[in-house]
Length: 332
Image 1 (cartoon, rainbow, N blue to C red):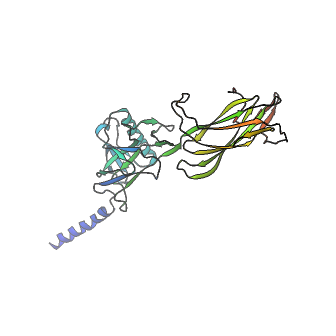
Image 2: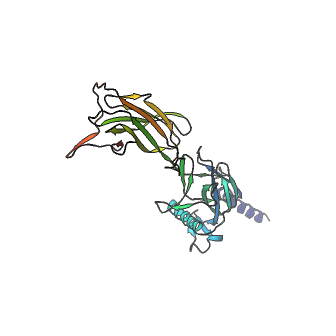
Image 3: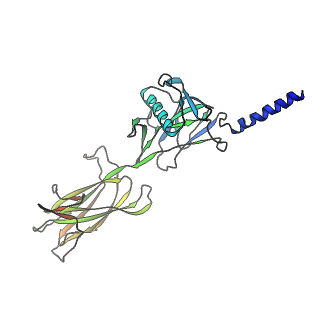
C-alpha cells in the first residue's frame, strides 16, 4: 500500500510543472482595444475563428483549419516565426475575402469590445467601419491584405491580425489585443487668391506668401511653417494659386511677406482658414474652398527691393527653379 501511495505522489509531482508552466488556460475573455488613438471612433472588429491548434514538441502552435476553411488549405501549418504567421494570416484573409464566411464574433467596438474564447482556437481579426457590412480587403504593396478605415481627418490601414487563444503568460490571464494601424493624414487644398487692382506696364511683379500651421486637428495651438509660395502678375486682375497636400482639419495662417516694389497691400497682409476635406462636389456651387484673399494696388513708391534667388540662368533666359510659383493661367 505504501508503495502505491509513494508512486501516486511521485506521479503528481511530475504533473505539477505541466499545470504550472503549460501555456494553455481555460476559456476566458479577450479584450480588443484601439492602439492609443484618440480620433477614430467608428471602427469595429470582426473576429473569424479559422481553426484549432496544438503545441508541438518545440512549443510552436500547429494549426488545423476547420469550418469554412476546410479544403482551402492542404496542410496543417506550424507557426514557428513571423514570416510563417504573416503568410498564414494572409491566406486566411484571402479565403475570407473570396467566400461568405461568418465571423465568430461580429462588430466588436475596438474601444472596449471583448469576447469569450476557448482553449486551442485560432482567430483572424479584421477591422472595418461601423457602417460597413464586411471589411473591405485590399492587396497591399507587400502582397498582404489590408483593411482601410476612413475618418474625417485620417485614413487608417489595418493588417489582418492572428490571435491564438491559450498561448500567453500567467501574468496576462485576460489578454488585450491591440489593433495596430498605420495612420495617414488626409490632405486638402488651400487657395490663395490675389487681386491686383492696378499694374505698371513695365515688368512682371511677384508676391510671396508664407503658410504656417497655427492649430492642429484637435485645436491645439502650434507654430509650424508649411511652405513659401509666390504669384506673378503681368497685368492687373485676379489670380488663384492652389497649394495641395495640406493636412485636413488644421488651421493655417497665410501671410503676404513680400509685395512687388511699388505695390501696397490693401487691408491686412495676414489671413487664416481651416483646411477642409476635398469635396465630391468640387467645381459645383456647393463646394466650399479653403481660401484666403489679398488685394494690392500700385502706389508708385519704388524704394528698391530684394528677394531670395529662386531663378536659374538658361539659354532661353531666366527660369524659376521652384515648384510653387504660378506664372501662367488667366486673370479673372
